[in-house]
Image (tube, rainbow, N blue to C red; front, side, top):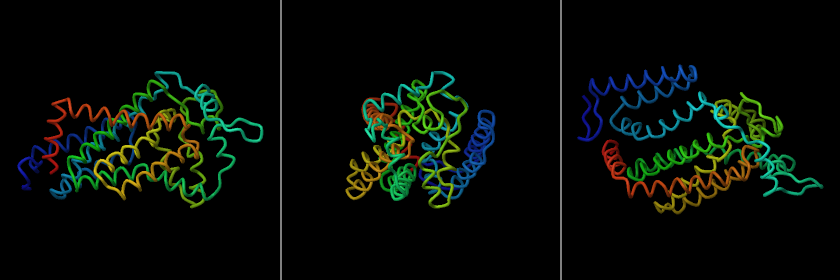
Length: 312
């Protein structure tokens, strides 16, 4: 038997059975809802490997289970397309974007996406693609850093991240929205079962003769989930906790990445400026709401205290 701190999860028949049943339930439910995908098996193998490898890796994967729960919810959204419940906003969003942020170019009024589609270049393609590749590694890397430095701040950051995503998911289902590239390829008419598209990021893939973004966007849960831009939300959360924990140099880096991601979201035609602003707003609301909850809700405080002891 593995010996750890009194409050840590230890390896015994009961915990092994729980892990096995949860793994089996996840694979079964995933197959039922969205069909078999090799990434599901990889996730189960990764979790089990880290859970059993050592006490340190077990604490690590239990801490990051918060992110795993988020990923599972996001992945299962494929089984419940938001356009089944609410009409998709296409033309109204496109025209409002043009009304607020339209750019006059050679006698035409263009959205910022359309402007950059005409005026982009290889240098911007490469730099913007590098920024966009940061949208998951930077938050997860920062979370890992906090995990080893300050468990309490790690939990605050992780739970805030999930809360912001849940707020975004609510908007996805109440306001389904087509991304700019959809209008460029399909016009203003709704086409269900539309597959994900790399849009402007295809130029990054082409430059490096790689399918990096293609592999990412073929796994998207829903094309009609452009509002809010959660890509734009994540770096706001990272920057907030970077500043809160007084990481001066790190916060400067986070701010640069944040601006780069915001620009790329529009430049690559994945989001309107309105989507980006909505993403920023969602992050701010999520951060404020979490701070309110953590100061007022006792069961949440107790949960965090308990969770901190488990992964300490």
